[in-house]
Length: 404
Image (cartoon, rainbow, N blue to C red):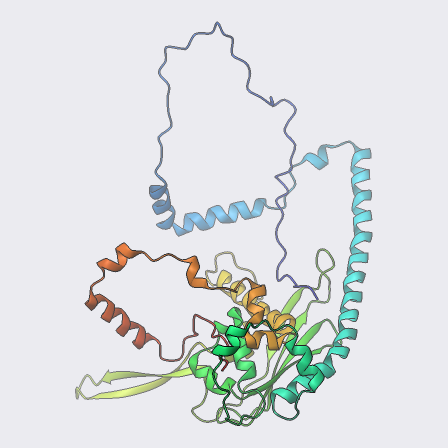
């Protein structure tokens, strides 16, 4: 199923308005006998861009007013259609009727695509079940499956010679399979903190199911762990009843399961300590409070769409960005991670996402700036980064799967 838009893009209907007939298409020619007037030219005062930017920055109300005025113009008729003769307007209405028939077929097409997707998902399901058994050590792959998997390997004799001796350590299944796969997807990796990894190591499977109505559900299956009692945590994505422009299904909202955290193990919050001094006795005490923090498990508490649109609400754009990110994460898990989990585990899938190769080669060192930094400056930077990285912030780089 194709990626569904969250909001429809607004179309500028004014851009196509025709040029009035009494407006010349080119500048009027000037006679070669004309003389330049003696009046000195008057030039408009040039306004520096930085000055203009500072004016708007210091007047947010002015910016909001301008945006509001411009927003009201979008979609309004230029009057051209209304100025056409009645027979032409009738033909335009007829074309709109033809377009509506086309839209009905587009909606039917999307519905049939969804049914076809469900049909083949039923065929994929036994393969996903087989994968889960191998990953969790419940079953070993057949010789045919191993041989088929080796066909795509490219390895020369030198690489074989450089290989270290195989480890004799006994491991059950493929340890940390889903955690490694998720960390190799850049979008998902940005949501995973160091604290999250301890819990995500117990993730045994990620499954997909379709709803009777347009929508899907993601199932995260966990082994027994010290963090929560849930054996399975789900998140469901719902679509609107009506199709959007082009017949596509339009995302509506998502709902996640409540996580039953064990005492003191909630990864979506952190304990913040603050000293308080008594005004009379001058004695101090430490007060602890719980505050929200970044965590992958916030994924199961998705943002809620606003009920009323408020142009003056500063948080409106932030909410829309969070909704779009939340939907994209669900789509990536559904369309990329689940179908090709082994490719994400090995990191091979990243080359198809434009992430392959040596990223360092694309950047050049700025030797001049590096020379200006003293050893003390470098030490201070290192100390600051150590203090900030307390395990609650997502890693900026997706870790490649470690292979011996």
